[in-house]
Length: 165
Image 1 (cartoon, rainbow, N blue to C red):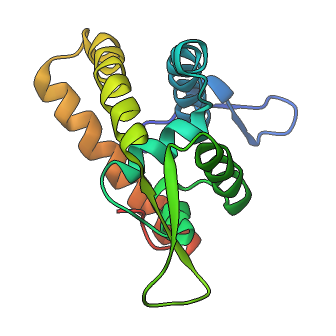
Image 2: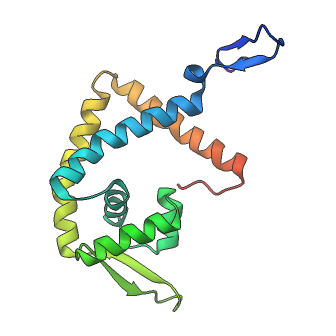
Image 3: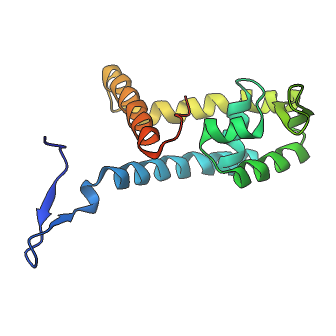
């Protein structure tokens, strides 16, 4: 079965050599980091938010969650979520309330100030997305999103994890 990945023979030993620029995990990582850096500059310069803080705000705009649910949803580690939550709480952008179902846990929600900030940032985020996707036809964008979701699900299956969505 052809995976579509280009590999070359290593003349020294005849083994297949990995060509990094053709290796999909590398390409995905480079693309993701590039997009994150581009958008992060705008968030940091204009709103004083790091990437994890913005992700936390964006996730909480969809509804309150426990830190563990945020870890699962965003695929950020616990420490990153905890640090982002501490900063956002100190800036009064999110609130922490005791969980009704588990006294040891808590739920994070956006405050009114957090909702206003999210409402200000969301159009900027959507504009960056539109600019990034401008060279693609609508069908290509839909296909790209479907393929990325399939890759996420395959990675989760292979690692024994539950997909984030």
